[in-house]
Amino acid sequence: MAASTAVLKDELDIVIPTIRNLDFLEMWRPFFQPYHLIIVQDGDPSKTIKVPEGFDYELYNRNDINKILGPKASCISFKDSACRCFGYMVSKKKYIFTIDDDCFVAKNPSGEDINALEQHIKNLLSPSSPFFFNTLYDPYREGADFVRGYPFSLREGVSTAVSHGLWLNIPDYDAPTQLVKPRERNTRYVDAVMTIPKGTLFPMCGMNLAFDRELIGPAMYFGLMGDGQPIGRYDDMWAGWCIKVICDHLGWGVKTGLPYIWHSKASNPFVNLQKEYKGIYWQEELIPFFQSVVLPKECTTVQKCYIEISKQVKAKLGKVDDYFIKLAGAMVTWIEAWDELNPLGTTGRLPNGTAK
Ligand SMILES: O=c1ccn([C@@H]2O[C@H](COP(=O)(O)OP(=O)(O)O[C@H]3O[C@@H](CO)[C@H](O)[C@H]3O)[C@@H](O)[C@H]2O)c(=O)[nH]1
Ligand SMILES: [Mn+2]
Image 1 (cartoon, rainbow, N blue to C red):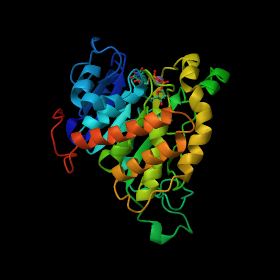
Image 2: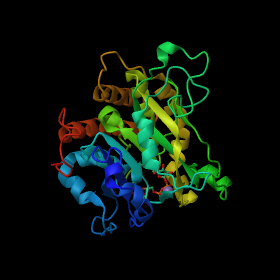
Image 3: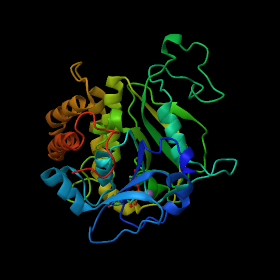
């Protein structure tokens, strides 16, 4: 894709968490090359991550994170893909797209390569309809519209904060499902984008995700996972529950569906089970908690909403496990670090790499 036709090329960063090499970028080059990459190198900082020639990027390893955040680096996970949220924090752009390094370009039913980034941008730049479900899916899409009975007072829609993409080949299943269905592959291409209705939570997967950083960025904290934590692979889920409660409160939309990527690597289900097992029973308490969260009308900014949620996490989930008291504290540290690196009004206005 020519740089000149790359939509939002100066307003969007691509964030990639990695412990591997980044050869997967070769397949994405036609779509990603015009954009700035923020690579968050997890694990051993002395390892050199090779970035293919021709990409414009900044790379942060654990030493960089510690240097930039100081003691506040404690809120950024280590040895877990949750570390990617540091990339959201240091970005200076209005939009973020994050993708895993084992996700490749998928093909649509006509055999054409899917430009996932282009579809995410379309999703983010068009309104959402969270207050009344449109049965013909995305009404703002070419060749579709609101169906009979859809209130005209609601047809303007609201801003879209999040675009949640899906995966062909290896689906994002939890470990028990992976163990029971080791050979299951997702071959079903559903040609739809939907707004997730207000009041409905969803399991947000971080491997093919885009969002309006200026709107919802401060709430996109991928919770404490990995090294030293009792749980893993719930980082994106935690963020998804928090952002959905906040988007519902502030009147923004969250979409799911297109675009698809081709997810190539099935991580080890036994390792995943070890990471997930506490989450699998904790979530039976976490979901009712998030369903019951009420944000007061004084919560008029994402930061205020997020701090309020952290207070309720500490008060109500601390009895589930001490981990949630630590997590509530990390949520506050995240906001403090976010506000330190993103003084009011600077998002989208500073050149990259100007983080302290
Ligand atoms: O310690 C780590 C492990 C991995 N990464 C990077 O994070 C992504 C995801 O890693 P991987 O593809 O191995 O994990 P999956 O089990 O397929 O995906 C899970 O991770 C979630 C986030 O995408 C997803 O929702 C789950 O299904 C890769 O880029 C690794 O390089 C890491 O940084 N640190
Ligand atoms: Mn993967």
